[in-house]
Amino acid sequence: MPSALITGATSGIGLHFARRLAEDGYDLVLVARTRDRLQETAQALHLEHPVQCEVLRADLGRLADCRRVERRLIVRPVDLLVNNAGLGLYDGDFAEHDLEAEDHLLMVNVRAVLRLTHAALGSMLERGEGAIINVSSMASFAPDPNAPTYAASKAWVTSFTEGLRAQVGGSGVRVLALTPGLVPTQFQERAGVDARVPSPFWLDPDEVVDTALADLRAGRGISVPGMAYRAIRVAMQFTPRRGYLPLSDTLQKRLT
Ligand SMILES: NC(=O)c1ccc[n+]([C@@H]2O[C@H](COP(=O)([O-])OP(=O)(O)OC[C@H]3O[C@@H](n4cnc5c(N)ncnc54)[C@H](OP(=O)(O)O)[C@@H]3O)[C@@H](O)[C@H]2O)c1
Image 1 (tube, rainbow, N blue to C red):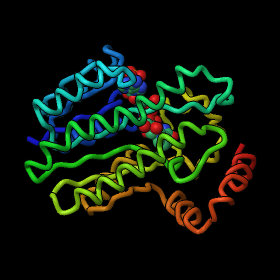
Image 2: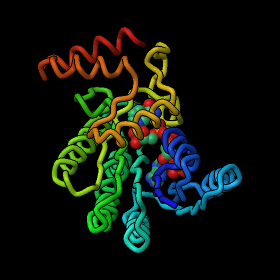
Image 3: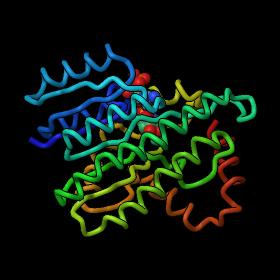
Image 4: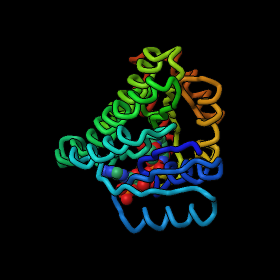
């Protein structure tokens, strides 16, 4: 049976990855902070599908916890790693934010992705097979005055993933950056996002996961789910860098 480790597997996009991979017959290792939700998720998946579901409680913002997950990946390698856990900070200005919250964001969104990718990659390269999906964001394609640290953290994820994919090309290991736009999850409430955005911009989480897995199979390096967001991505590629911020500001004002 193939196996996958998913971070942030108890809610939102990570939970949809867990359900879809369980349907596809993957044994799962589920990582998140909240023990009850981990156990409920594992039990529900195991009842619905004949797969093993291991839970690993870890706060990926804490180095010691992150190292425990790394050890799991090194000692018992998996076929697929989904680096999905992440958070945003949209509520208020950078200067007024608690510095520890900003630092925590970077540790989860960046350092954990770096460390878990490193832990999983060695054995994948030795075997000449395996896959890593790093969940980034549309926010990775441009600076965001409403969430500068979040956008910068996701820019790192996309750039890192693209560079790594080029480096391991031909090894048999596939690496993908998933860059969704808005998906209705707990992310918005936790991040303080104003969610009054028209419905065409909301993505179905199942579509996000299906698109990512199809793009991974097709050997693509970046997955942009949804027609609207693919069009926005193309438009962004033709917009000069200095045009991003006024454009993003105008769009935000029109949408909210
Ligand atoms: N939703 C969107 O609109 C959207 C758009 C673009 C990209 N994304 C990205 O998609 C990913 C998943 O977000 P989501 O929308 O599914 O969010 P979500 O519904 O808030 O789920 C986050 C998951 O991550 C876990 N988690 C949070 N902090 C953690 C930590 N420090 N250590 C370990 N696990 C942690 C949560 O469980 P616990 O709280 O129990 O730990 C939960 O399982 C994130 O990387 C996010 O940046 C989301």
